[in-house]
Length: 70
Image 1 (cartoon, helix red, strand yellow):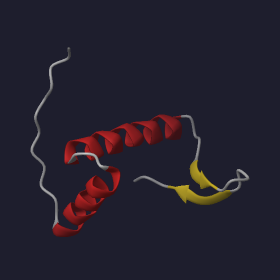
Image 2 (tube, one colour):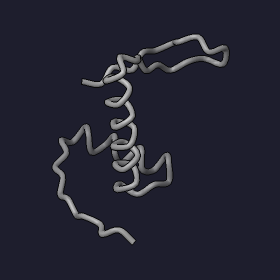
Image 3 (cartoon, one colour):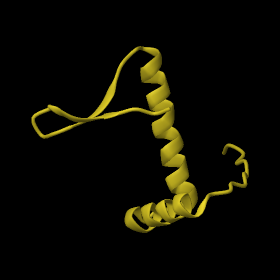
Image 4 (tube, helix red, strand yellow):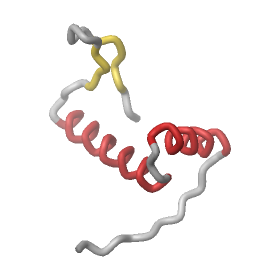
């Protein structure tokens, strides 16, 4: 079993509200939501290094929104 690390984060009220809503909607803990966000961010970074673009696509595979992470 890997050793867990503890972190303390400060959120402005709007970010906290978003985190809280995501937690409620997904049924995940705050930590679970943040772990998912970190995993998604890692994917975006890896794909950007390959000069790939990330997008939300509709059921036909047509891009409807590009995801840009700064």
